[in-house]
Length: 287
Length: 247
Ligand SMILES: Nc1ncnc2c1ncn2[C@@H]1O[C@H](COP(=O)(O)OP(=O)(O)OP(=O)(O)O)[C@@H](O)[C@H]1O
Ligand SMILES: [Mg+2]
Image 1: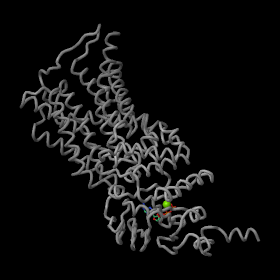
Image 2: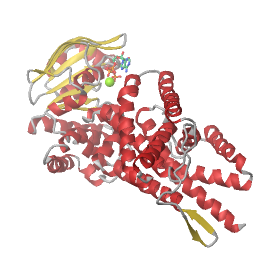
Image 3: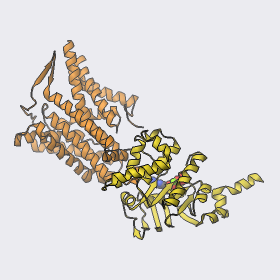
């Protein structure tokens, strides 16, 4: 019993880091321009398909194609900004919601059209296997994903806090007008935020493909969880998203373990409602 | 050095600047006074490219700049210290200053030169040196104003636009800040356009002044003359009120 409990905690923690990584991109984009990217989970889906096809077509393991997938998603983020977001940057919130929601529908439709609704999985990767610590088994793909998420989040924090470009991003998200008065090109910073925000999803997708099914709707579940994480951490707070990712991962597995797996998402959504009602700004959010 | 010719600026339907003209000569301090909502901030933001004018011209050393984006304006050498300071609160004092030199740091040797400018800023405002690791949000109002000025200086501007630097500050702090502004003009030959509601201090510091009312320049001239002008005294210096009180 005790072993199972620890096992549960560990898997919650591991998936939590990955949630944090996915959420960081969403919260960063929101923090910069107050636009909610409803298609965030679907970029994850695209990243997973990229990983999958790199494996099928070129025999490249998801771990090795990770840099390429990340780069592709970075480009996709930039493209999305210039093509779709820039024209609606000052539009009413409702139009912005329609656009990012439209992207969601488009990406899911595209994936279904191109690759059918089949669940696909890479049967054997370089990471396949478990390690055993006492009674606890840890899947190497999951462990790698968590480690990758920690590294990626760490790099991102370092970039935002310590580099000139990162500070310029923070300046724009803090006060767009003052940043422009410093000579910071806010338009480029928005594009960069989309690039980085979507690239983090690329990393997450590439890591996920080693142990998760790929299918057109895969972004739906992750999308919802990501919103919970971002709301809990505080919209726009990168460090908040990190903490909240871990909390959500733990809540999910613990409620699944203590009450029943069919209820695990229900508790995650309860958590969301509780945040919205009790502390709408989230753990570390501004305002 | 800077010539503004008949600019008109709008916020949607609101006509905020109506045929405004103004000029600045190198090394002078010119003040722009006016009541709330007169359009002072709008004028600075039109120069800075934040709210570009719909018509008219802004020439800097003879070159039109009214179609440049804000970063183009900063690059040419015009920096603004915005109303209400607008420092980056979650960033340290040092990081705020570094962002002020954002464009310069992209050039070769830019980083080294920016370091020198930072030393100069610390000389002007020693308190910023003491607080350099502190988050800007934890500074007092006066210190934030000094930081905002220092941040603008980091771009090594030829023209500084200052929007109500005395707002909400104690008289002693205002004095210190105005002393620095005078110094900048006299010793560093920086041209200053000073927006103020505190007309008395502003006219004492400046050599010339403009009076803005509901988007129009209604008066301009030597600061000393404006100080003596009846309308200015009544509207901005409160001389009449004082006389009534004295009587
Ligand atoms: N973003 C905006 N949108 C619409 N109208 C605006 C905006 N900013 C300013 N205005 C209007 O333009 C006019 C000039 O405003 P501005 O802020 O330039 O005045 P100001 O002289 O700086 O006033 P204050 O002394 O209060 O700072 C005002 O009537 C104001 O209501
Ligand atoms: Mg103003």
